[in-house]
Image (tube, rainbow, N blue to C red; front, top):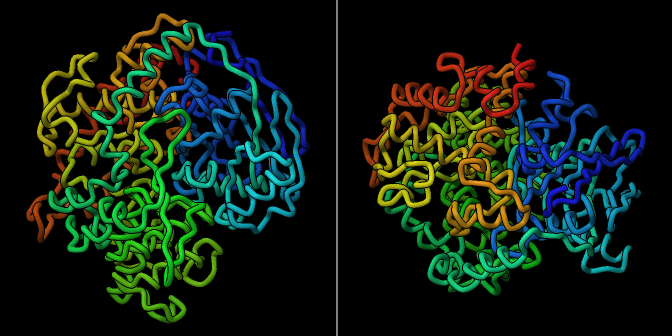
Length: 620
């Protein structure tokens, strides 16, 4: 068994309360690495096509990767996956924190949850042992109450807890999974799957130290970030991920008024700089990371915010701020606290509320539909009230908890024009009319619109240093959609998918060469940047096979029509993503991935090249 792994995957069946351990081979670990790779492999092999994502036949997989437990900045990541209730395709999301390291140190490389309990339970894992425990006293509690109860029950404040929240209990289709209260696997509705299984939490305590093949090499590489983070990532420490709010608005890339505009007059009021200078009380981090990009905020009346839930990141500030026309930072911080306490995705929550606001503005929703709430853009109190309703599926929240695609179908008429999603997943806070390659990335993403395994074109307009190991040498404009840009997208997305297998934080400044050094130092494998990139391509392709088996076709690889419309004001006035270039670009991408250019389906030869020829049977 390679260093860095335990060689043990925990399997828990909640229906018959059985617990067992899988012991994969070293070849399995080197082929799939963890995270998305583990998830795609097991879901494709073990799920029958067409199952109900919220039924007992779905499986929920908690999967760290090869690098968790290694003490370097960026290793505090983990993935959660299942068939998504939001899209009906493969679902996975990554979260930071400390829980995933605790799991590895408790002796397990992943947890596969099967079946459904007949009453609320939580899973207790401690140094190679696991048991299912009653969670009746946890059901219906806010996230911090659950953590307090579990750590008190075991009399150990060092226990790490992941949980689904009230949003998961109520099967909100974009409920997420919380790690340590302030870190979230936010997308694809994994919390709803967890809630559907009546699994309220997984509590872990681990004291075992992982072995590394070359600890000195790992530590030497880790020290580089420790010694250089101020020069490479100091802005993240200073103003967090929200440090770019004003710059994005100035460039036309800040989603505003349900993506109708790309600039926001109130951008300065909700920026990372304003947060730093007003409500920020502390900075926080993930395992072993020196950057401390996480925010901890506190406010008084009228929006009392408890710092136990941290503070808003960029995605939250844009989704519950500018997208809803709200420029009150304290109200946005309160919205963040509510979403974290209920454990629902701030992106989908914000997009759902902005969708409802546009429907209200256009007369498709009235006060009778909203229960008297004046759901206009800019109404912070209305936004906060609706978050409560979504999390508990009450009033207008019952409709919005289904996601914008299903909500638009129920409302009918022009509502579908205001539902900003891809494959049913709400679009994150990055504007394709600024970053054209990102738009194609949204279209082809296996989980629906996603920004984490995507290209951000503006990064590569001046330098391609991080892509040079694969021969991508020429910077390109952000609005370029040439075959050269699609080639760049091809390599970037595959590398990002490796980050979701490895697992590595996208905000750390590691070069591919340094990641190779870390993987080799941990495992002892004589790996290369090429091999690791192929790990990502393999994972992305298996996700494609899963979706194809569920009935997805190239028609599901679309960019929501709003981005094909020109901005009528702001820095990008007159700019739209050209629809014909999107169609051509996605087909070029298919070919580069080893998928059929016309159908978008992985080919038998392409699967064999990736050493997953076994997956061809699922395409018949």
